Length: 153
Image (cartoon, rainbow, N blue to C red):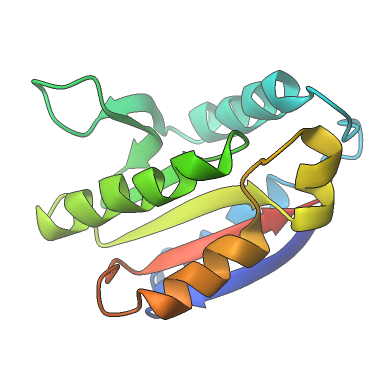
């Protein structure tokens, strides 16, 4: 697995950089020992979760105490979500991050997602960065959370 590109929605890069975490975040996806293939998502998730936890991020943080909704990780005023599953889950992830932002729990977010080429290798209809970036442009005034899309292949 390797880092491919970032997409900066609502100036999220400045928020991650201000905390000196943008390079660290993209470096998580520089993992040549992880081979992209069909059904490799468990390995990707384990790697990313381990990297986040090593840096003090809380895992599987509840969005609301009464519901089972979670984001992959949170630390201070940042949230991170990893999406390697079905494309239909990606807008839901954006909605959870938007809620945390509007509730004042975060100032910025990150979303790790495979490129289209990588998603096609992982499986059928897997979320991909190119589509999510296009949808963020379309819903620019609806999804206002500063979010850094971190694409990997």
